[in-house]
Image (cartoon, rainbow, N blue to C red; front, side, top):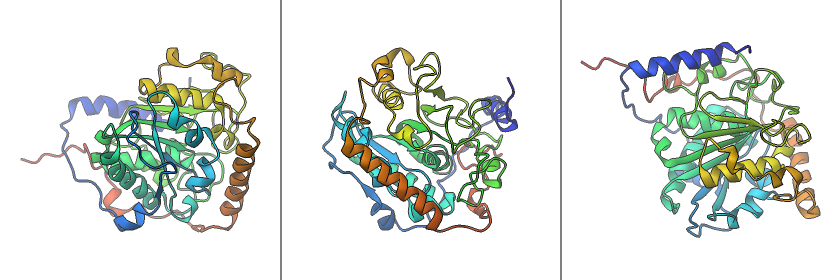
Length: 331
């Protein structure tokens, strides 16, 4: 099997990390005021101290928290399943079409803000697209103090290695960008591998984040990586593309298993009833489908009309070296 250079370097970095001393470095500074970031967090049913703790939903490019999540199973079904979960979502600035380095601050702050309010003292992150493979991983890298506050990180249709297709972050999230080279740096502590217990769920028929069939960009070393069409999940009959993975009962079933039993997801805990649409299926709910369709239309319009950056932003000076375990001789 062929591997991207970034994946190979991540494996080398893992070996390096075992022999190099770790130095605790402070979190990167925020460039956005706390009250502005707090205002972007919404918990539709409030925070009731449910035993499963708080789940923070992070949307993708061109969307908002409500547009991506309000009509689907994560808001409408998950709160009352299993241990019970308090569900919140964040709306990233400029519909998440601006500099991903800035929008990732909102994820880091969201974890710090919500963790003390969670019954578990920690937060589970579920993200889609850019909100799955870029923003949370960036936040975990450059605000390393939040790693202990994250019980699990579940990515849907994530672009950990970038995408070969056009995107509105002026190629920040495109394969080979300066940003992606930095995220997948071989230095220990970079975002090139899982930094907390992580599950990545994707679909081979993703029409936005590519490649998938060979050397999938959604695969993160150190995580549990599963396409819904894998034979040990639901097999080739499972159908979902990039946007509909949010509504996919197959993906939702994997997410629920990861939340209940921990990441990386244990497939023996995955209920195959989700494969046959007899569980977690909101696709038969006309109101939910209509709400989701409205969100997709808005997403498409916002990708066309919202802020665009004509060239890739420079890497922020405070983020050019991974903060948490870069080896230094302090003597």
